[in-house]
Length: 353
Image (spheres, helix red, strand yellow):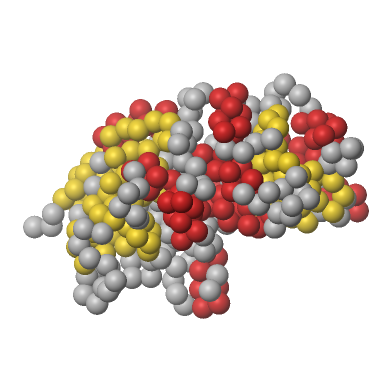
């Protein structure tokens, strides 16, 4: 009889169930981890609330394969090794990158695995069940990294979201003379403030509607904080830059209003990086992008070759983590944990089995 474990299984919008589920078994090239912790991503919340990008409008354009176990911000301890697994031992603490690449498509073969056409992110596919469970299986194609023994559970959970933030900052190609704006100061946005400030730009400006997040951002390297509920952000940025506007605008909030705000705040020839994920389609004035300001629009998807640098940065203390985990819950209390993500003082919420 197959062994069972407890897991949070997604069946449909607003239908998550904490129940018994078959415990994974390591086949050739695979690893099974005992989950030690898993963060709740905005994507997990959007999935629960029926986000159209995840559930689609029909079976044909649906991304998620339900029922499946959510959660991609996990880490855990090796408890089972499949045949031919090398470099890892029972008891090692590991983190896997959030995507399970196919290894066969054009992008995987060129090294751009994060753009794999299969686009299988842990927690959204039945063959890539995630970390909202007692155990999780790592596919033979997974990109795996060892977690230093001195890392706390909070630091280990933050590796994945900070890695996504680092990729977005790298996409911006920040120069020392740049005025950089980061819009949306959740755990990822706040870590981007930290990472952007390490490039020593002229100024880092943080934007959020929550005062506690603005205060947190100051500790992570913001020079100026702006609350769009209290001021005209674009006007303030122009005032701070002799009327020119910012050089870089990184959108990390997933708010449609932040897009037009960014277009307005950028200087001519400015660089706009889209990192946040939206719940619906967003419109913008393409005349501003083209004929008006000749802006460069840059996408940022997942974490792209940044895990090792993030782990090294956290270990050295250059990348800060204190305060980014605001709430911790047991997996069995998942409903309370999901609600906590909407609290005024929430940053990153994590769950433990």
